[in-house]
Length: 266
Image 1 (cartoon, rainbow, N blue to C red):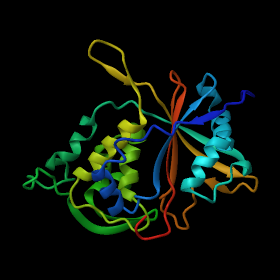
Image 2: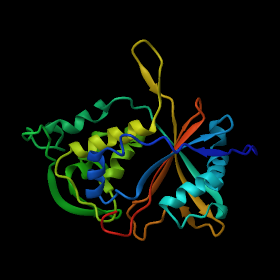
Image 3: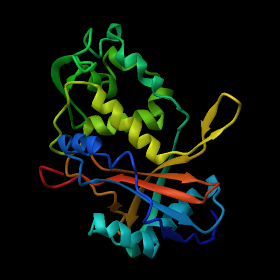
């Protein structure tokens, strides 16, 4: 691991345009995520290499500019108590929402046949089951979380590992008092908007693009080896999460996180 020290500067004038649209904020309110889901952007001072991600993440959570920003969202966070970090590289290669087209095909049993007057697809309902802290009462959630269901096979394990699929799963779980939508479009729209907020792409041919950002799931631990960021949930549902989206070329990073709320409207 490199011993070089990264420093960070908060890009206070940069906002996640998609996340902050009125429509997406209304969805997040229904899903009990509105005041808990954030994206903060930072510039950093040195060249980034993927082998150095743990040093990078550790320096980020200890940086005074980052700590000050995070404390406006999560006042319990203490950067000087971060002892170590755990990172996981997340595949991120999808560049089109066509990735989710199979969800809209009624033959795949996720949505009902036809659309409503607004062109929306109604999600098929099912008998409720409880799995890993999550209540599953529709076929979209069944596809996402119930590995013993036929719907689960709609996406391969490699596809399910993709960041865009994980993002959809986070919106399906929501917060502690999440109200499920009956149509699929809000989930796909929120996924599209936030995905675009977090990623950079580059042109590789006359007709193609690829994702240039590097995505990492990250957890910070204190000196007692307890999770200090993101906020731990008191039950088994994976409400809280944090990701880093690093753009090595521009030396910028987006910290995307959800700290589960304690109040019904967060």
